[in-house]
Image 1: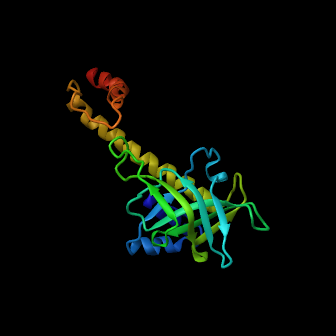
Image 2: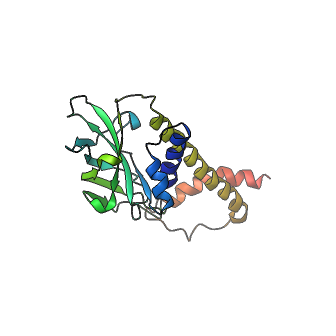
Image 3: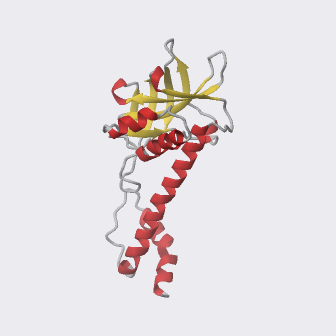
Length: 213
């Protein structure tokens, strides 16, 4: 997801928008940018938010709410997030900003099953007044579908990179499946004991395809 943010920044810059140029500059210097947009029960995705964005007098925002699948939980130095500002005179607005890890105001819940899911630990992050400074607030958008280039850039980079990852996973599976067909699954271990049989059922069509040549 670090690459999602750097990809977003490049997509915007290619279109004459330098609002995220600090992402490219600081990523090159070693900063790690995490993706903190997803919320449980928010079917509107980028078009709405259950997180509160409360304005500060200096133009910054404090965020209050829970973000799920927060990428790179143990390692990020900046968290890109969003919330809904309902208190400003021109609200409601969806506010996008970046929170610095050293600023606090959040709790990371260690609720990620690394064995059952990817190893980068996308834990739930509870924002409780985490501050995005004024110079790290990058958008104020109307709720609902929006033609803003940031929205396009987020969807474009997220979908392309996600597809690339899972295409790679699928290619790897097809690479090792012929070798492993017929081997016992007795040695499998998962936090949820019901995972093994589900996986076996899921790969059975692939096994049959390989067996058929």
